[in-house]
Length: 333
Image 1 (cartoon, rainbow, N blue to C red):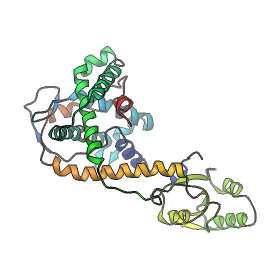
Image 2 (spheres, one colour):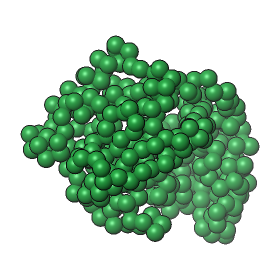
Image 3 (cartoon, rainbow, N blue to C red):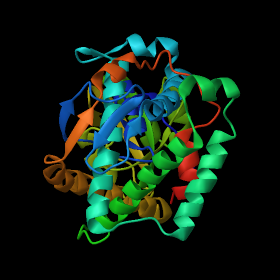
Image 4 (cartoon, rainbow, N blue to C red):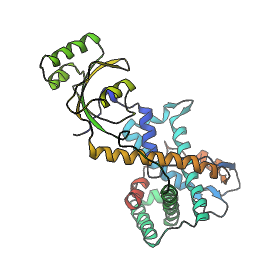
């Protein structure tokens, strides 16, 4: 059954923002100690002992990705919105900065562990560089300072970070039970009025089809949903997950609304397996972040704050290539 997102279940925009950011090709945050310096050259952004330099054009590339992504969804005024006390542009810039610094720290760790790219992986880096570079215009190349050498460094470091992550998480002893990953398919009738939901409940119990009553009472006309744990109010989920296939709940009050829930599948096995893998990866990431921050706290990095202040997402070029898409094409799972 095709999954549909309904108004009662719409995720808040701020959550969507976080999901889009975290679900990218490199999903790491940063906790490093930072030393702000003016001793770096123009165009140089991050440097660690014995490591290659991160250039400002790498930040420009990531900013181009997020600019396209968010402006397509929310429009160009999104950067003026507020996330807490910060404007949205500053919030996303901080995320990009953290991503670049985390990748740099992971490359330091990879060098210590002897994690390097193999021949095929190096070939993939070369192909990714060519694919990305060939989609750029001459104007974009001259304006951003992007070169194949810089792209090679960027793709290599991100690939090594991904390989280190896979290496460190492969031995984690994390389990996900079938029940906590279970995905069910439901139909629902919803109303803001207790009187109306009682009428709907009586109609269904009198023999009217669930589909017909849902179409009549649901304001948006939608009535089907694919449900995972943690997506809805606790009362709603408890009622829904206690149903067997074909069963209907009594009236459920959840988050100020009234529902009647009918289960059409109490375990969509294919979707459950996919969800189980997603939960497992999420827990691995959480464990990795907790473990790596301890190591990362001792990493010394130079950060060129004066160069960073010059960079703006709003003013970023919309490049012909997407680093995320290109990286996933050659290194995605």
